[in-house]
Image (cartoon, rainbow, N blue to C red):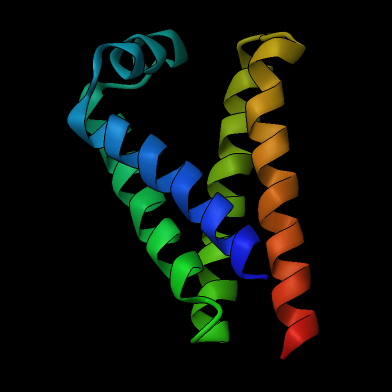
Length: 113
């Protein structure tokens, strides 16, 4: 469970921080998705918070589950944005892979408590 928690926390921590800092690739993704930089930064804050909760999940399982559910909601929103923009599989794949990782984390975490 701990390796999966680390993987999920690192992915969302790095991506969230990149959104908060508004690095050029994230600025481009925000514009392409129809988000303002400020809105994309807020998404980044939610991702970093989710990453922190997932990282603490092995110690505080309820926090880990709640954080993972929040990340799954963010990923559902990302998938909706991609589908509304008629993006292809290449653009959908990262969100789908992350959703599978987060869902796996929840299943493992719930199975260990």
